[in-house]
Length: 148
Image (tube, rainbow, N blue to C red; front, side, top):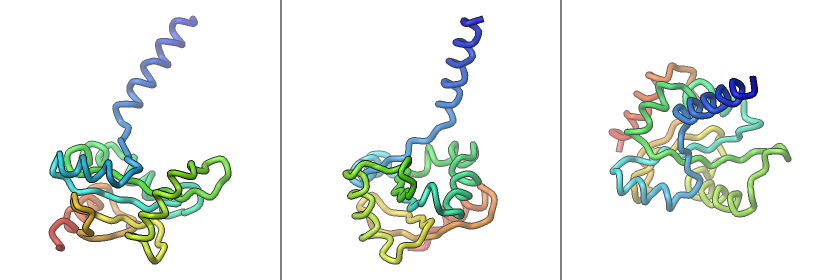
């Protein structure tokens, strides 16, 4: 019985890893990868534990298989999270990085804010939460590439 439980746990962890995303938390790392892969950076400002639209955007778009599959070849993902719950607090170093990103790209403090950047960190366009399908949201993001 133990072997079955352990085997199922290993399979679950492996399958879960297949559908996960690699959200970076450092702009310089994102820029390097962006240059290397020639992909734009998708910067998301989120309040993961207090912002209703942020939570919906995460659940309805970012965590869908459609977006996960699409993003692998089309974006470098960068998240600047600003949790409020004590249980979700980030390190002081990470908060400093997120605050620096907000000072540069989210001066009005909008949540969620989605900013598309080129590999140099220049803004290509912005959007926020939209109550649309993953396909429609991807179309919105793609249109930001063309709006510059």
